[in-house]
Image (spheres, rainbow, N blue to C red):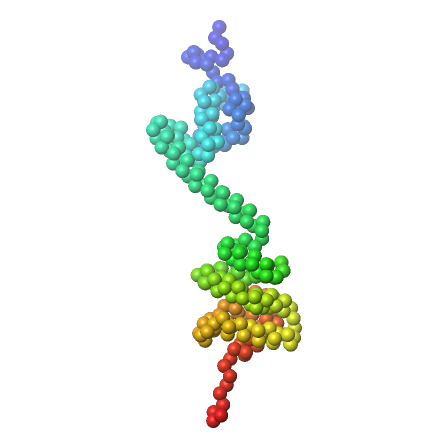
Length: 265
């Protein structure tokens, strides 16, 4: 009497259900069905009872597919590798290894950026700008003021990427002067003052005096004032406008104007 698991040609009938195949290979039934849909694993016909039955070859094929997939091989490349000769397989795996190494580097860089975001000020900014913000905090700016400076620098980095290094170098040199450092702090402290506050004129005079101290030539002085207007948001920053800074800028510009000459004097 022929065994029920044998066919008429003497070959053994497939006996594994999809759940049993999944258990043997260590995958989910859903994964097997996905491999069927992608054409990676041959899908057997249903038997008389309506079930698909799998044989030993299915276990082998599924194990190889699982191994390649878990090794990072894209599913679209698995069919080629399953049929590839050993030499071609080695070459393909070497290429995938290079691609994965590059991906690992990218992921490590992403992790580094995410870690940097915890400090807040490193968001969207190069390290040189972050160092500058740290220095501003060290000279006396509070967290809110540093946050404002950070947002300004984000805008500047986007709009003027080629100028950032030059501006940072100039500001760094200026901040070596204790008078400039104190002016920086006082300008931020004046942000919410009324524009008619008499103290603004005193700060403007100090600013003009420092411009003359650090720039010998008129052209360099004009360039420096342009940088300061940008970096201190004298004109406008988005919807956050400081009338006090606008007034301070006007007063400083007036202080820097050369005295008018009277004809015949």
